[in-house]
Length: 152
Image (cartoon, rainbow, N blue to C red; front, side, top):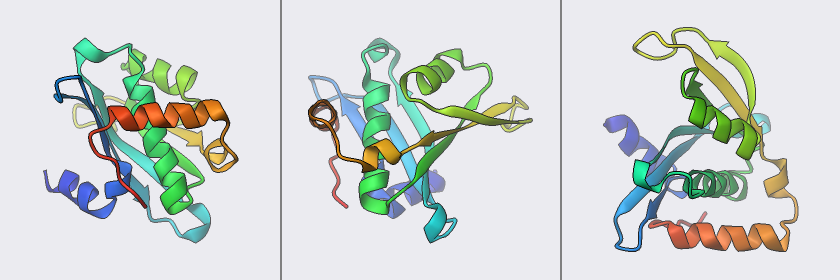
């Protein structure tokens, strides 16, 4: 539990929640910055979850994009990384097909139960370039779905 509190205290700009119309939390993304020096600034997605009843509505994609945008705006991140279980086909589809992540390598026995993980990366250069009107509109939608709106 301390690990998650550390994230919230160290990088409050990078974690978001999604609420339903009644104000119930239905999803979240927990992210952090990796400390590899000025030239290699990058973020890492520690955890992403959306309640089953609210999946396939685009919330995970919006949460991921909001965290990625904050990484660029607040910390000048060049890319974001994450790990995903090899067996998690739904997440793998989201990351590769919807969000543009690339598989870098397989990390054997990454998880406590011995399952392998894909180590993945997403280039964030598109977030640092001028945003189109569509991207700006999407960001507004993301913010309206988020319970926590943080500034750099």
